Image: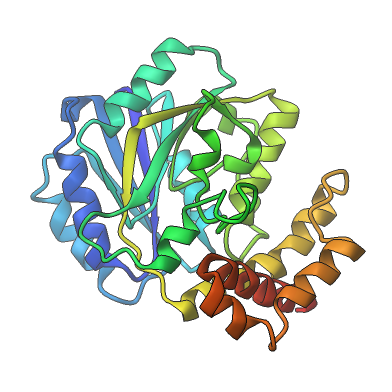
Length: 298
């Protein structure tokens, strides 16, 4: 067993089906990897689906059920049951390219040290209609080549082979299991995103983690975004930042006075319709800051 794939899931068994089927079609033998699914308190029949699927699939599949505690807790539980020396985290809405696992393993074979990880590439699933909002969300350079959507910002890694802790994206990332014997996800984070960035920063500080970027390890993200889901995401990012900042006071991510004023001005009601007409990406950026600031206020 070379690699364990850990997948947290919550009320998305329709997507989980496709996620698992893509893992069945990997270029490495099934004997070289296991799949561990943690059902984080789903109420949509996920448990029953997994019990039935386990009897039919060629995958080495384990699944566990817990009360709803969040993605961080689910990943921690998955790692605790993993037997391979390398852990790969993906989302239940990530459809793996056929050589995803092969490419993660290649990176780890090239960088055998304990504190080496592999960041794979994530893009929208090809079956989705890619809207202007979704294009914005995967561009870190949409605004003046410096700012962007922030959900995924792989364009910022175009000319580099490594990534910083800010790219600790658990949609498609692998690490040595031994690292998790010393560190784990902080389960007090309940909102969007911060539990993975928090772990990434701790690993960079305490383990001197080097995160190698392998753009050939592709995961296709089957998660269409609407304006409403976008607003909710940004609000959650704002709310979660307080806990992150409290844990890491030396990392100044809370917007200070000038930046906060700029965010407030560009996201003010009179300007949003103007940006929507003149510059769509700026409209999305301003809208993100509007709901981010609301989240900060709680």
